[in-house]
Image (tube, rainbow, N blue to C red):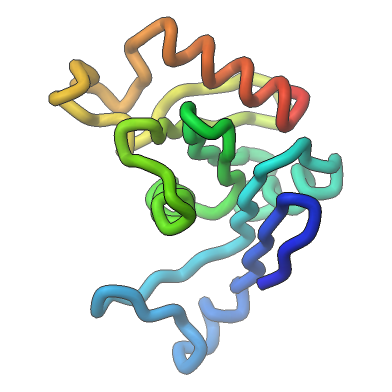
Length: 143
């Protein structure tokens, strides 16, 4: 784990092949690939790293309250967990993805299913929430 300029990088791809160094949390095994915690504007190289896991598709989880986000990895839950461990509140976290080839943003993630917030779908249904997500993505990632 290294931290510099508001960016934390977890490159744990070798964990997929070496069970002795897998992360153990809450009696479950997690495999993470490239997961970046972004608190300031990200560099182009960071976006390229994050896009390697899913062949140009970049998953993101955004904290609407702080503006922090995670990019990369294979599952939104990994980014969600990282933000929660860094002080975010669940109610402020929303997930989606970005296709670097088509430059399309989607708002689809399992972490978005929350009936208590009137979001019964994987899609972010609230237009205001979508607009906030877009603003943060533009500010931090220039998407």
